[in-house]
Length: 169
Image (cartoon, rainbow, N blue to C red):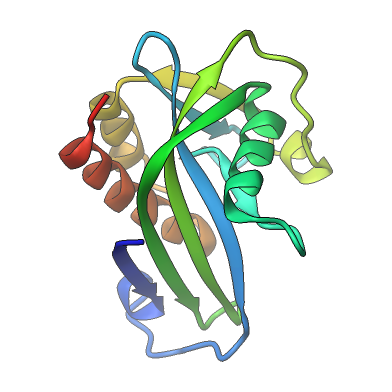
């Protein structure tokens, strides 16, 4: 899979701090609906916009994880359309490393019930639908206050820019 971006504290805070932790493996989707709009997850508690996704469970394949995360966060089943790219993160301040894989996907049918974690419920998340360009503008204009959220914003901008370049829908 194409490597899109490497992020570290140097990019976010200017610090040279690095983590030596084992990488967490995670997945996200550029999830299109039948109007060719993509899902953005809005986390009101953090005032943060991000793409649907999350960690890969032990023994779970990447594609199965994408489908599960999309279903849990948006309520939609989805069809995987193709690979977009990968982002690596090294967050020294919170001693975390991460490899995050991004896929194009299409929502199928009508949404079912979302299955949110306690954390997601406390963040009061909701799904919004926007064009790729609108999504990029929303994520770019949003200025998170906190360390972790700035990593999320930076990686999502890079991914959305790449999605716009290679959008084949």
